[in-house]
Length: 141
Figure 1 (cartoon, rainbow, N blue to C red):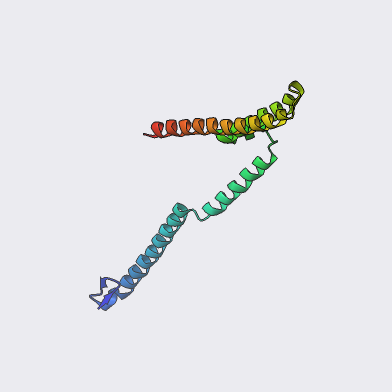
Figure 2: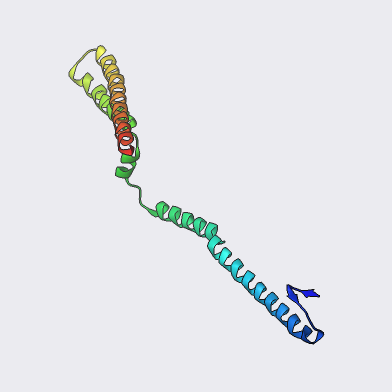
């Protein structure tokens, strides 16, 4: 007769074999519990909760930072900075040109200069952005 991998040769040793089978079963259960606990620790079931909490706290900290025009200005692409600077310079010329030239054409010339400077600022900024992107590609290699 076979019991859990143990052979019972005589009936007198039945209790001993049965107890050995039970203790090995308990050992196996304990071993499986330890393996399960190790796997759970390796999987880290709280990982998603920690990541969510980290994102929430990061957003909260960033929302509490005061607005910085310098940070905003450096985050904007150079093509848009060039467009804004060209537009600002064009508005200055558009407003001041009629005071120096007393003609009806001064406003039209100022408007043309305004558009020209905006386009030039955009193109120069686009060229600077392209240069920066090429430098980044060269550094990655």
